[in-house]
Image: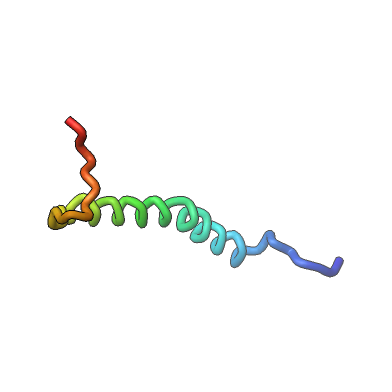
Length: 55
């Protein structure tokens, strides 16, 4: 039989690395971005600043 055989050790190990990377790497990036935004200092209030508090 000719064709692609995905049941090899190389392909199995490649999927062992690719599946967790594809599942957890985006989560880690989003959490890192959220952490950087949480540490960011508020900007200077000017005339063009839209206030978020109405009370």
